[in-house]
Image (cartoon, rainbow, N blue to C red; front, side, top):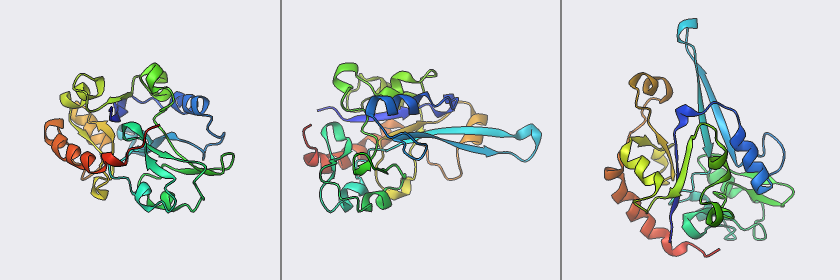
Length: 223
């Protein structure tokens, strides 16, 4: 069984928001800036005109290996689906918002049209046909690389094996599956990476990742 994840070449993001539009169109997401399965964060900085900068950080649900939103859900609406994708069963959701409070990435919102909490699903309805997500396929600068992280021949594995990367809010111990590829240029690293960010190499990260995945894999439900 595949195990899906995404790597982000975030410094390539130009904030065109094509990914957000593609996501809404593909998945029927509600219209509105506060109703987003994926989004682009913007950070500005610098003290003088010479060192002003703007950084863009694409983000979405991290489909954590040890997802706190699944753990706290009282009805089982939040669950692991095939490929380790974290999903919501709309019919079981009571909008208690426990999952929204538990998510470290603020990746969920209430969809009033579905009468349930909604979130990114890695476009699981199109994976078999197209092999990737709508946001990844649409991005003009190829920020996103999606695929089976357990497949050594997949594009995402090759990217992670060839680059250093980091994950967000690592101290939450959720084992997120959204990997941010560290810029190869040292100056760009300093400008775009926050203090205390820990860089990883796949050879060192893989063992812990596999151990944690094995603990939860029995919970993955067939589509």
